[in-house]
Structure formats: C-alpha cells, structure tokens
Image (tube, rainbow, N blue to C red; front, side, top):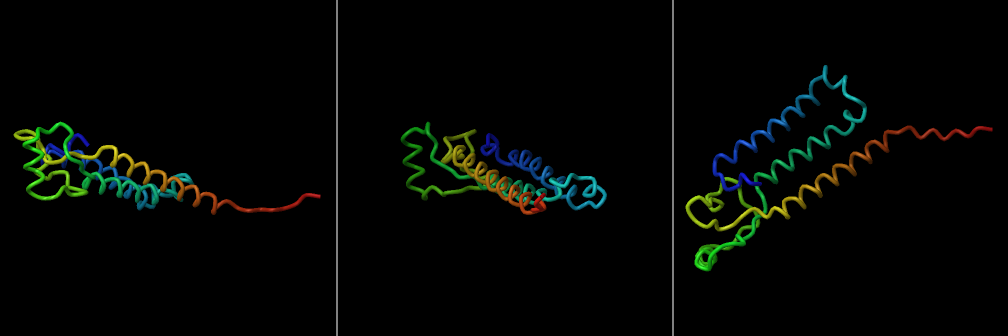
Length: 142
C-alpha cells in the first residue's frame, strides 16, 4: 500500500490488479480456455476470482490509522477537524504527504489481516468444493 499517498498515481497499481482480475474472468468465461483448465481450476476458479475482487476492493478502501510520526500541531489540527474514518479511498487528499503531514495512513497490518482472512476463507471454500465433488465409492471387497 505504498501507493496510497500518491494521489492519482495510485490508480496505476489498482489498474494492474484490475487487469489481473479481468484476465482471470476472461479465462474462466472463455469456452475454449475453460475446457483446457484442470478440474481443480474449473471448480475453484470462481472462488479465487471472487477473493481477488474482494482484495482489490479492500485495496481501494484500506483501513486507516493516525500517522505514527506526526508533530503535535498536526495531531491537534487533525483531531479538531473531523474524526478519523475507519476506511478511506486510496486517492484521498488526506493521505498526501508531499506538502504536509498526512492526516492518516494505511493500516498495513489491518489490511494484511483482511487479505489473509480472505485467502483463508477462499482456501477453505475451495477445499470444500473439491471434497464434495470426490466420488464416495464405498465398495467392500470380500
């Protein structure tokens, strides 16, 4: 999330993430490509794609915290204006640190926790999909 303070330049990394999601959607929606995917990719592709979309959205609206290295006057001016939001859009001008101390910064740990939870849930759902699709042939040999 280094690009949060870059203003409109932060759109470039988000665009790259969007292109990854779009290419995944294309691969899953194209009949020619879909037939050549492995069974695992066909079963779990939509789950992984949905997780990627959620991660892009969470990157666009990351959790924020007050800056840890702000002088007292910056903290007092930020606290008098309005309360700190829980989330902010990445090109919010209050992230800008080029001319002044930013009012808030991205909570990188919080964002990483969100991503880890999404990846873990997507992994569990994928495991459930694979486990449900396995044939349960219970044949006893004599």
